Image (tube, rainbow, N blue to C red; front, side, top):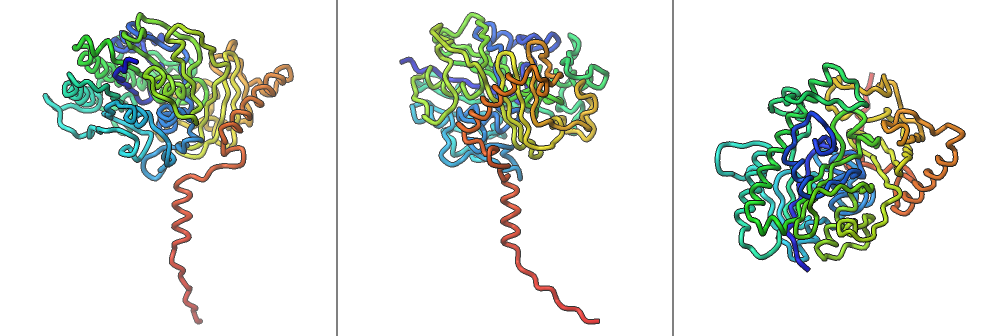
Length: 453
């Protein structure tokens, strides 16, 4: 079997906020061209609406509550992959690929253990004028491609961009980047379209434009070698939805929806195909492994959509699942989604959704609920996505929908049981909980000195 190179690029907080997904004001010519030259998945979803858990699921083919990353991996959050979890990089390295990492990764605090033969340091020098962010990553990737030219071993290069993640404390909150409003500003309909929102989104569009420029530079370097272009499987995606209320950190659709673009001319992935089946991120690992002839681990929950790309018989998923447990705080929610229906089950009395704006006073607010600081999770939510795609009319208590509610609850419970979800028996302890318990146990006992009057 032909062994392609794999160039996997992943952005931060992008959702589907791209021109090729119908956003009219964002400028993404390079990503739009990639979609036109390859394939675009109209309904790709992450399995967790936050950075580390979603990435860990993508690169292991297993849910966050299976692989151990139920929250953020950095600082005192300290979640990490269980010992023995297999990362896509390690699986491909063991099969003969030269594996390399450039830019950001956020799925583990132990990247040196995941199987990369080469980790390009973020501060590695690059030729030319000083660069930052995506520009610097693009230069590092260009250098990598130059060094690999003529090498017979296939490569797996994982490229992570910071953009368009928020950069708190910077002008416009998305880094020291020029805002982009040349084509206007698009505010999604679940958010209030006012001056504050438009100001945030013009800066967000500026960060996306920089990301697109970096992708364009990488693709130009790759495509300069015609044979390598033909035999490189390019995959572009993001970790979760956009960094605005009711999206990131929420299992409503705007939090779970992701872009997914593929191009592999020699493998027949070309011509601007558009695929509509629901594809969760856990399906990416087994798909790449099948396309490259590498055996997938037996314990994954993802399943390959390679037959879809080859024009063979493919049974679309009838349901997908999403989850959130920890991010800024514990906010455990699970969901199941079909083509038409969406059911959410909450396991705490947290706010109706976690605010991902990283601001003390958010500038962009939701339409529903109109006062989110006073709204809390109901135990169960049910939405008809056909008539209510914005998930605003909760039908969970409507008698006429009781059979649908019961069916989706059964499906969700069956999935949680099959994947040994810890929420079935209680709330899992966080790493900081464990750290503090250890501090309490290790504290030196102090005997109070009696006092006399």
